[in-house]
Length: 466
View 1 (cartoon, rainbow, N blue to C red):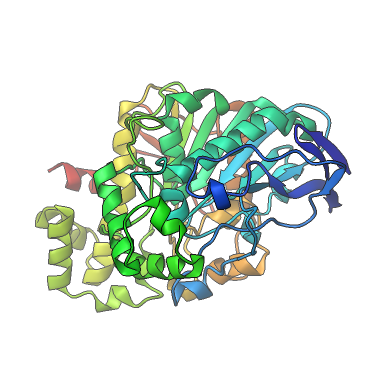
View 2: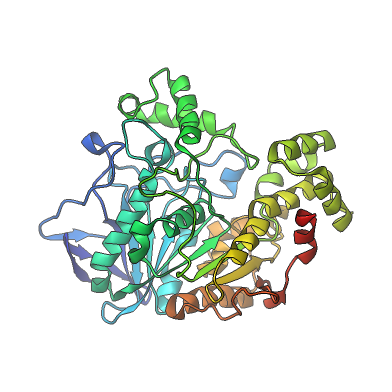
């Protein structure tokens, strides 16, 4: 199966009953003279280029233990890491397009993760595109001699490739839904606030990631910490001269000081060019949501939930600038939970549930839908942890990688509900439950028996408003 793009012909193949094109370059390799620069268009090629295997992944390290056993990484060597995969039901027609931006704290993840296989979306009538983008130092460190937000600029370049080429794959460039999880959702929120990107997609889904961006000064603190470990100036030129593996080692060392409660990290920067603020485009339909127990991914496998002592929780509350009375309220709502578990729920709400609801309250009616993923996995006592919804969104619960988190037995009704809602939103701009409005405040709770709940978690929100 051959498709003609603006840069040359691509050979894909049929996998099951859908056509798949893998490792398609949407920008030139970001190395050599292009290191730490904005993405450039790929060079055209002669003849037919095979698009049969996943392309190189962005430079990265695996997740630290014990998360590496739950979230296995795919690392494919090569410099041509600005690539994407396409799944399509048919090369003809004008079908809705969905573009997936993976998570991983902007330093992990790739489009090669088996859980992100787009076959189910294609079988549902959607053209699914999943992208790689620069991570960590390469994509998000702030330098005085390099453009900011290189990882975001990569995502913009991928969307421009979609605009220019997706019709050849049977997709409609005028009907593009951008969706992502965790850091991917945070990045998408930045793109929703970037006026120059407005025409590249129609709507968005933010899974477990609120709008967030730092100043240049904040971002350069991370750069300075890495530069100190390397013993070089905090400039792109100096970093480019460092061996890549040594650079990744330093990135890992600095990232160890990062936490859910703040610390050095990698994310969007308010650069005054691409991103001047975080006011999301009010005209674009958006779905926001989170899992019920985000914190369990970090607190349970690591044993942190059991190790957290009351005094440690109090120190964390001071750092987060959260009143002690809020935690007392959580202990009253959940008297059987340990201090660590109660603090984990508080953290989930502080970082996601509460800010997403506040954001919904500021948006025009009919433009926002809220959800919560509540199904509790028995595997590793993860419950409704961060990232647990992903196999249900992609309908990939049968993959061994998904079952590391979900276990082997998962409710098909939940897959049907969540995957179906995402497809419906891409097709029509309406996921199938009432949009956010006052005073009803409807939230879709995804579980074995998915249902709409009015004013969901009102007692939690009341705690934060006292």
